[in-house]
Image (tube, rainbow, N blue to C red; front, side, top):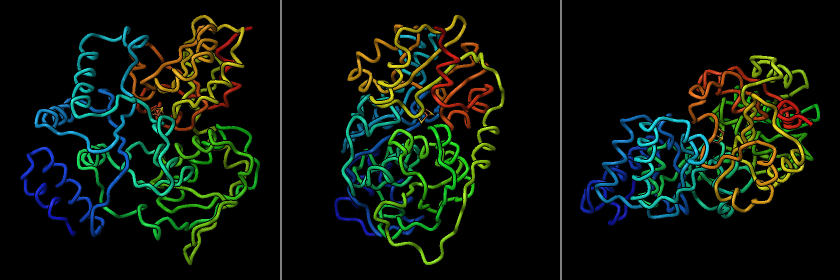
Length: 393
Ligand code: F3S
């Protein structure tokens, strides 16, 4: 792999251990995927921020980097942590709170923005064709497919290394020729809501492996629904982007896999992701991926004047930045007794410690992961059914 003189100096340790370590991670990754050079990125986004998913050893590594003087070279943001300070943090032990704040302190020393969200594109939208190094798979699919930016699905360590160096190896989806679709998906049934779009993502992720699909039959779907589709697609497969049939299609591969999706395929996925049929879940959860302003507006309209049922937790997760921008909607939602939580989500939090055994959600990604990561039974239904279960009046 070709390195500039400056990159070589970093590689050889002339600028210190931290940047040498990061440069070596990027070069090793580049060599694995036959990259010929590093390219500058406009932003990095690091996942694995919650102490629940990170654990102790990676936290020590962060500390070593921060103590060695590592500093980000580009705008760099962070995925959600394990709790929000205002509500869930108060219900967790001092030990967990301390470990989580130690992790954030290291990121802070390195210059990361404390965004704590999986939707960094709502804070600052990346430019079309700009190169990024993002590690949250739902955000990667959204950035590539909806925003037209270019990012591989980074792991936490490679996104961190890219943030410190300000560059990433030039391979995979950064290159135009690797963004060509290889599968044509015909959705033969109109999808009615965000949960069905998510179920489509789960199904396609399982079939496609890393093949990019062109999807036909999704006219009328909203950006928030595409967010659900992408998050689910990345949960079961290695796909990093999709295209829609009415877009200007990048040149296709010679051989296209053809997939037809019927209503019964979608219903089967929804049934599989619903491990219980309860209508009185312990937790009703909206906001995976984190809510946009328009989603909060819609939830506020539907919660206005109503109250959360006794014995039910109702969480709506979003970023701190969006929460601030949508203060009035947040006020209306919280008046109902729901909690609009920033910095966190159900999957990366300690729901078991709060006695949550059943979760109802409109997110296929949460329904897919919660049985293993939260040891909870799940019900996947659209937002209106979530609200019916959460609210009275
Ligand atoms: Fe975001 Fe958590 Fe879902 S990080 S994509 S809300 S699992």
